[in-house]
Image (cartoon, rainbow, N blue to C red; front, side):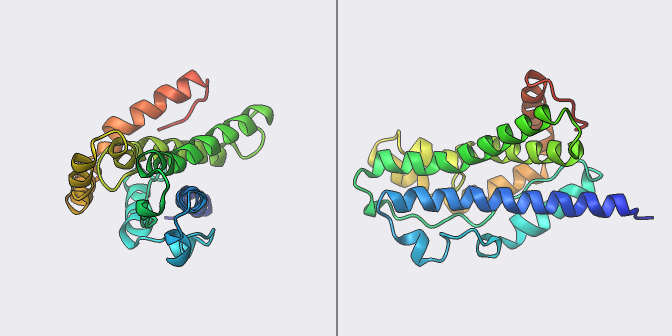
Length: 210
C-alpha cells in the first residue's frame, strides 16, 4: 500500500529533478546567447519554464522508471538539448566549450549550495530532500560530462578536436542517443555513476542511502 510519505518523496524528487534539469538547459542557452547565438531564444528555449525543456522519455518516463526500480531512493533524467548554432559565435571552437561546460557547472553549483545548506542547518532542514537534490545534481553533472553526443561532454571534446574530426564526431548524435539509452537500461547509473557520487559524498562527509 502506498503511504503518504512515498507520495511526498516522489513529488519532491520530481520537483527537484525538474528544477535541476531546467536550470541546466537554461544555462546552455544563456551562455550561447551571451556569445552571440540567437538560436536558444528564437527556439523558445531561453526560458526557466520547465515545460519548454521536457523530453517525453528523458524527463518523464525515465525518472519514473528509475524511482520505481530504486524504491524511491534516487532518480535521473534529461531534457531536450538546447539548439545551438556555433556559426553565430565569434570563436566557435572556444565558445562551444564554455556552452558545453555551462550545464554541468550549474548542477555542480546547485549540489554544493545544497551541501552548504545541509551543513549550516546541521541536518535539521528536511535532510532527506536536500540529500536527494545533491544526488540528482551530482549525477546530472557527471553524466552529462560523458563524451557521447549529444551529451555536454561531446561539445567539450569537439572543441578540442580538429574541425573536420569534430564535425564527423558531432554527426554521431543519433547513434549516441541509442548508446545512452542502452547504457541507462543496462544499469550504467547504478554500477558506474553512483559509486562516483558515493565517493564524492564520502569526501564531503555526507551519509546517503544509495
